[in-house]
Amino acid sequence: MTTRGYTFIELLVVSTMLLVLAAAIMPLTKVTMQRMREVELRRDLREMRTAIDKFKEAADLGNIAPTDMKAGAEGYPPDLDTLVEGVSAANDATGRKLKFLRRVPIDPITKSMEWGLRSYQDDAGSTRWGGQNVFDVRTKAEGTALDGSADMEKQSVVVSRQSPVVSRTATRGLETGDWGLETGFTLIELLVVASILIVLAGIGLVQYRNGKTRASEAVLKTDLFNLRDGIDQFYADKGQYPGTLDELVSAGYLRKVPDDPFTTSSTTWQTVASEPDPNNPNAPPGVYDVKSGSDATALDGTKYADW
Image 1 (tube, rainbow, N blue to C red):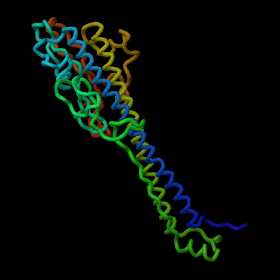
Image 2 (image 1 turned 180 degrees about the vertical axis):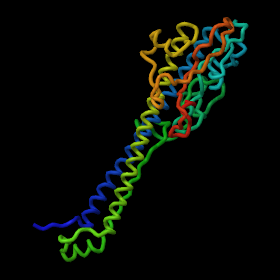
Image 3 (image 1 turned 135 degrees about the vertical axis):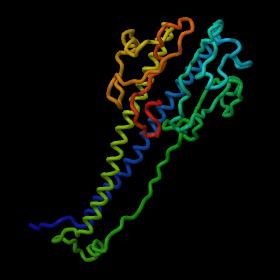
Image 4 (image 1 turned 60 degrees about the horizontal axis):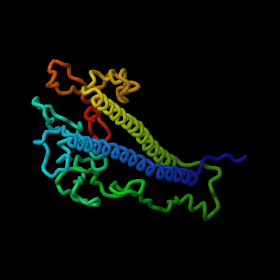
């Protein structure tokens, strides 16, 4: 029975296979990141469009003071900032504000707060805002989404082909038929293969850690959306904001207060108090907004506490 170690060409073949697998994983990672950004973009667009519709409904019902309505706006807000800053309520001498959006979100594709706008008077396919009002909003990102639709960042994967490098020892083996059955690999050959494996392991570890963080960030965004949606529904039904997050659970708007995925606790959420009610100044303020209690930094460089 002949005993031998692995030859360099055998190690080279294995390393090449590992590199091919790593090259296949990288595009998959990019697609996963793109899909997550697209999900976040759709959520942001839905939130802004819902706020625009609520503004329009309030205008049609006469709940907005005429002084805050722009001429020729057709009942739509003049800009996105108006949805955040609010407008004066009609027939209310206390100066109460009606607010429809907590913040203008950052476009997850362009990483900017600049959104493409379309007024009610603009054509459906117009890419330039007329400025009369805000009837619709879209991303300014150029390219194609994963489903083939427009207005998304285009991802492209370029695969390069390279011929494998064969060592002199392997070449000599091909020429002479001597494959070194009685000898293993040299120290230099072992170091080369070990270096390749270490690099691949490092890439895999980074992708694993980032993958866990991205999953937690996706959970945080979903939890914030559900909490804020519950607050809005509570206010729409009762005309006031809940005193605590637990009140959303007792009133049936949430099944439970979720755990912050970064603090792993349901008691660390930071609440933002609502403005005092001018009709009842002695009433305690309610919960107008909620944010994460984590002081960590997200993968995009922002603070979780600012989401």
